Length: 211
Image 1: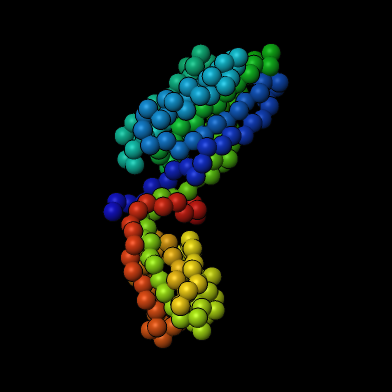
Image 2: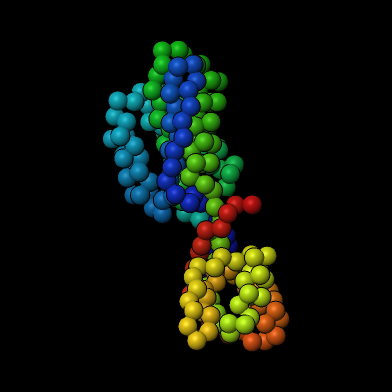
């Protein structure tokens, strides 16, 4: 699989006021330009009475598609600052829209840049930047007497337990980064004195919290 990349966990938003103007930062994970444009359109529809709906989006793990718009704000004061935030955080496959309701006080070019930068920052924070890493899903099995020992060990390991089942033995599913898998499996084998069975079920990109 390819290298890890940063994207967003979910679609979310946050807002703030600057000199009576209301700014709402929306951010969402998107896989294609069509998805980005559909998200943009949904915000435009929701806020069709807004003064501006400025946007920036980056598509592709290599950031192959990058688009932004000031949507009527003075050139370079909205879309480009938003894009710079996205690039600085290294986030791809995402779309950010900052909606503005004008409050009657002009902010000036510098004020607009700061406001739209902040709008992008709060949107990304609300949507939660995560690292999509090559990951492996293992179906594991241990005997009941070893379960407590395994649970205790797992608490300190870089894994996610995504399910367990109790039948003749304890069967559980572990999600682990590809880079950590060999060490995790070796540690669990050691903890159980070799009485630990596992089977690779799936390989995929999965979200891990950004460090």
